[in-house]
Each structure stands twice: as C-alpha cells, then as structure tokens.
Length: 416
Image (cartoon, rainbow, N blue to C red; front, side, top):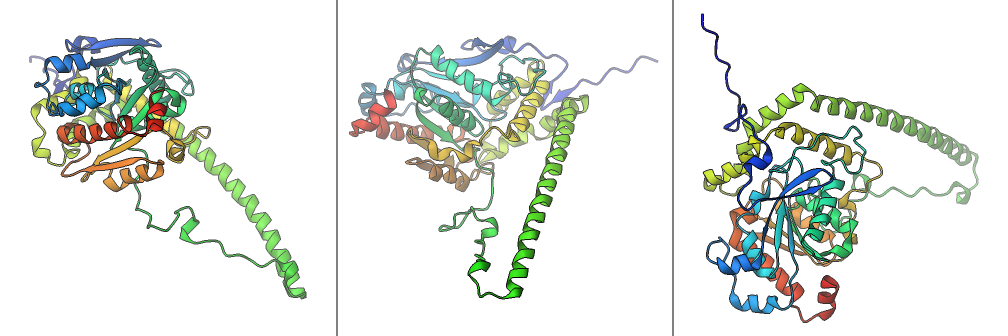
C-alpha cells in the first residue's frame, strides 16, 4: 500500500507547513530597526508623502484651512501603538492623513509577538527588565522610536492594549510625550459602572460602623469584659488573616508556575493554534460594529503574521509576560495612576464597542484630569479602521484645540 500523505496544517486559512522569516513577508515600504537584538518592523509616513498623494488615502478630506492653522504650530511626530493581535496594518487607513494633520512624520511599529517583528527567543529570567515580550521592552522601544525620528517629543496614539504602552511610556518619560490619544483603551477591567455619588472604594458599598470607645462608656463590668474579649478576638483574627494571606500567596505562586509551564509546553502551542484557527477571524469580525463590512483585505492583513516562523511561541511568551506583569507586587497598575497624567489627553471609542464598552473608556477619561472624551456612533472596537474619516476628524479637532489654542501656556507645555 502507498504511504498515506500527511495532512497539511492550517491556521485561519494560513498554511503552517511553509512558514517564512518575518522579513521575507515585508512590504516595499517596510523598515526594520534593531533594539537589543530584536528587529522591529515599522512603517513611516511624512506629510510630504501625503501632500504628493493627498487623494489616495481614505481620510484625505481634512480641510486645507485647518492645515494652514496647524502647519505653523504642531510639527510633532506621532507614534502609533497597536492593540493585542494587531499590527502596523491596523493603522494603514489613517497614517498618511495623520501625517498631513501634524505636518510631521507618523510612525507605526509592530511590538514583539505581533506583525513582522522578529520572534526573539525568550529570556531565561522572566523578571529581566528587557525581556522582549515585556511591557518594559515595549516602553523602551516606544521611546527609542522617538529618538529614531530625531524628535524631543511625540504624540502617542494607542489602541486597546496599546494604550497601556502609551501611558507607561508617559510615566517613564513624561517630558517626551506631548499628548496622548487613547483609542478604545483596555486599561480598566470591565465591571458594572459605579453610580454617580458613590466612591466605589468602600468594601461592599457600606461604611464601617463606628464602635464607641469602651473607656468613654458608663463604667460597668460587662462592658469592660466584652471589650477585652473583642480586642482579643481582633488580635486572633488578624493573625489568622495573615496566615490565610501567606497560604494564598503560596497557592497563587504555585498556580502561576503551573500556568506558565503549561503555556510553554507543546500543549500550549497546540492550544494557541486551535484558538487562532477557531476564533481568530471571528474575533476580527466581532470587533467591528458591522461584521459584514470586514473585507477579505482586512482578514488578509490580520492573518499575514501567521505566515511567519515562530508566531505561536512568540504569542505564548507575550501572554506569559502579561501574566507575570499583572501579578507583580512591585508594579503599580496603570489604572491607579491615571490621575497623575498632566499632558493633553483624548479618549476616543466606538459607541457599540463589544470588547471595551464605551462606558469603560469613559471611566478612563474621567480618571484623567482634563481629558477629552469622544464616542463615534455606529462604531465598534476599531474606530481608526471602521470609521477612519470620523476618527481623523475627532483627532484633528483635539489637536487643533490643544496646539492651536489661544491658551499659550497649554501649547508651550506640550511642545517645550
């Protein structure tokens, strides 16, 4: 009998038996910039490019009079930071128009594990600050690209999980960030909205009742004895609570190690391939308000990185790094530091976002002093892809208000 032919593997319609090095998949306008041994794929657009082909982009309807107003004052580059599972491709409809708005260069790059950035081998030490899949490395790369553009400051535009990178980069070097544009920011964990007038900080929504001091109560034996027992049981309960906390931390540590070991095993690779095959394209469609308008071109843009060698291992390493970052006791969550942001901020989202609900994005805007919030109608999780013209209009209005505002103090703080 003739030997049975081995069945070819496929993930989301991409043949997994003929994978290529990421650079072999690059476009003519692609570039690669090496940082700590990682070759980061990026693309750059300048306003000169946009001026020479102003009618070729989707959002090229920016008014020429506003161009004249902004031209003399902005001149700040923009860095675009994609979300989880996305890449430079996600920004393709808005890069050139944004360059025209700011009269400067616009750069988008693929973070490690995504797009066509090289798949680096994992660090043996997960706590190493420059693990290529860590948040610290993404922040380092963001600031390095500002240097790459020869700029002192840049406007950071993040989408979804890319907003975490943008905000972390701000906290790392606030003097390098002129403004933040947070698109559908995945910063707060989804939860039910807190009613206006409630702080949400009180345990169970109730304030602890005040117990009268026994020493100020009428002197009776029962009160003294009960007070003594109360103090004793409070002390015992405190010791028990400390024991439970210690045990919980040990269990959490063991569970974490087990999860990491599983993700790095061959079963983890099988799992990520299965998830991407079954839900990858579905996830892209679900991110749009109207899934029927997701074209084959969009699907091809999102699945192209699945043609690169090592994509599944890199995605797993990124996931491991996210888990480790999330349980780090030394790292204060970005969500608890939003009130410290002092640069101009725009939060923009789709009003029917099923991934990061609009009310959740609005929570981010409320937590940042002076932030502007805009919701684009009939739009899902990807305003810059699904509603590029409306997105560009919102961003342009924000930049014009911020940088062409008569308030000279605001402008000087942003550009100096």
